[in-house]
Length: 114
Length: 116
Image 1 (cartoon, rainbow over the protein chains, first blue to last red):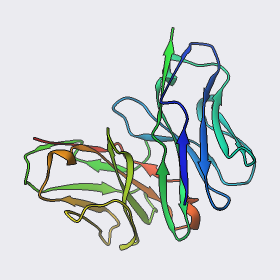
Image 2 (cartoon, rainbow over the protein chains, first blue to last red; image 1 turned 180 degrees about the vertical axis):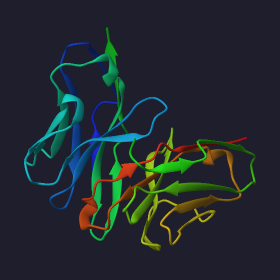
Image 3 (cartoon, rainbow over the protein chains, first blue to last red; image 1 turned 90 degrees about the horizontal axis):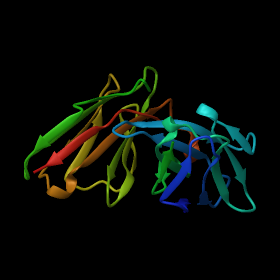
C-alpha cells in the first residue's frame, strides 16, 4: 500500500535562508509523487510532480524536489525563503492500481521569519 | 486560479440537516474527486467519478453520497449531519483516469462546512 510520511509538522526559517521539507514515501512500485501548497484560507496548489522522467523535479516559485529511490525520499527544497512561502505543504503519493486518487501526508507548516 | 469552481464557499447548518456541495471541473476534465480536510483526520479522499460513473471510493460515510451529471459537474450530498462533519471539503478534477494516480489533480477553493 502507498503512504507518505512528512517528517516535520512545523519548520521555521528566516527569510533568505534555504528551505528543506522532508518526505518519505512507501510504495510497492514506482510511484507518482506530488507536492501541494495550501496558503491560509486558500485551496491546494500544485508545486511540482514526479513521474519517473527525471529524479530532480523543478516546480513553481523556485521550489524543487529530488526523488531518491534508495532512501524512499522526496524532499522539497528552495534555496532562499521568501515571506510569501509561509504556508502548509503536503507531500502526496498517487494511490496506484486502477484508482487515481491521492494519499496525502499530514502536512508541514512552514513559517518564515523576517 | 485552478479552473475548478466550488459553491458555496461557506455553509453553516445544524445537526441532523442535509446539505449539497457543488463542483464544476476544469473545462475538458472528465474525472472529479472529493476530499475532506479536518483537523484530526487531515486530508482524506472520499470518492471519485469519471464521466458520470463512480470510479473509486475512499473513507466516505454511508450518510454521504455523490454524483456526476452529464455536464460533468458533481454534487456531494451530506445528510444527517453531525458536529464531526465540520470540515473543509475540496473538489479536484483531472483529465481522465490514468493508472497509478499519475494524473495531476487540480483543486478547487473548497467549501467550509460548519455544523452547529
